[in-house]
Image (tube, rainbow, N blue to C red; front, side, top):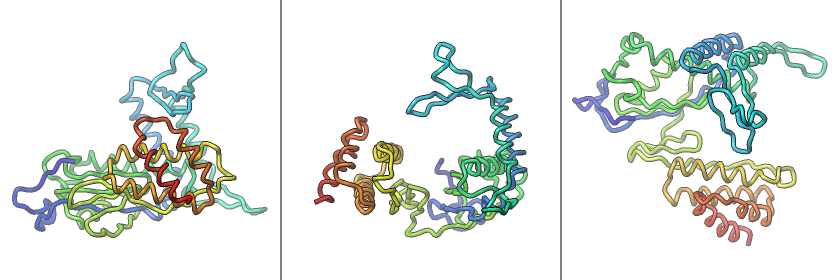
Length: 307
């Protein structure tokens, strides 16, 4: 996001005095209950047409490997067994069929559900499609933005950093205050969002923490409810650690923060009853050189925790 402000030192829309960066984190608590299957299917059809217009291919391919890799287009004809190719129109029909099943049963009783099931994979896709369509319409509707005071005179993505993740969003801006950003949510979305409190100029969003004063990213450390060792796949710890370390490389938090996060994660493993041998073995199985600093710290910290 560009650090653009008004020349008068005030926010663009409300005229309040400018005081650096404003931001808020919000979540749509009733998102899955309010999204209707018919709406999701309709928006998916619009998205399909946009994809077919923009893309030169009507196919997407997923590589069959441990590392998930996908691309737009057909698979390599020399290695057809290693890839799975889908026609996007076929994917749309599969999604529409899944959304059309709105019945649930409890023992002998059958119910017709409203909205989409909370936690389901297709529900997350449906929420992303519907809310994404509303974000897209706001982006391209300059008249609506101007009528509500959200026309800064330069590209919208230079004015507001708007990052969604299913039903959680974060808004950051040097042009609009927190109150204006809260109004923005009601204008963009048809589902209500609840704004989470800001603590000491810091916003916690997913696994990140944004410092509005220094404009830096950190880690939002949470207590994890980890499964028991006896009921977990042998590669569970390795996969979890590799995904966590990769995120840390992307976020680039201060050393002290990721060390605290390491300790918190290892303590959670210990509380869940994981053995010293099980975690130690998984740490030695990670051979990625990029994770070396994390792995070395975890080995030392785990040994101290188990004593």
